[in-house]
Amino acid sequence: MMTISPRVAVAAFASLLLASSAFAQGTAAPATSAPAAKTAKTEKARSPESLDCSKQADEKGLHGKERKKFRSDCIKEAKAKK
Image 1: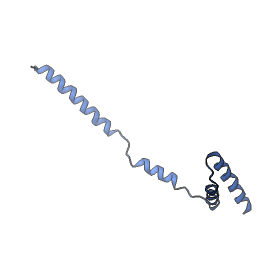
Image 2 (image 1 turned 180 degrees about the horizontal axis):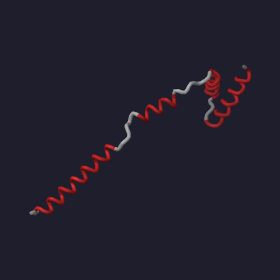
Image 3 (image 1 turned 90 degrees about the horizontal axis):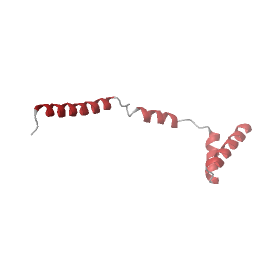
Image 4 (image 1 turned 60 degrees about the vertical axis):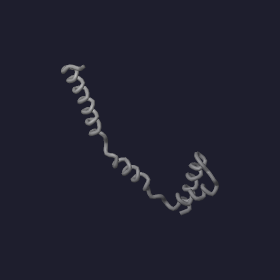
C-alpha cells in the first residue's frame, strides 16, 4: 500500500508531464502560413514564349537537363525574333 509521500511524488510527476505537453503545443507555428507561402510561389506568371517552349519540349519528350537547356535556347531565340 502506498503512503502519502509516494502519492504526492507521483502526482507531481504526472502534473509536470501534462504541463510540458501543454506548453509544447502552444509554441507550434500556425499551419496556415506554409500553404500561403507555397501558393504565392507557384502563381508566377509565365511569358507566352516560355509556355510555347514548354509545349515544344513536351512534344519532344525532353526531361531534366536536356529540357532545361532546350527551353533556355528556345526562349532566347523567341525573344531575339521580336
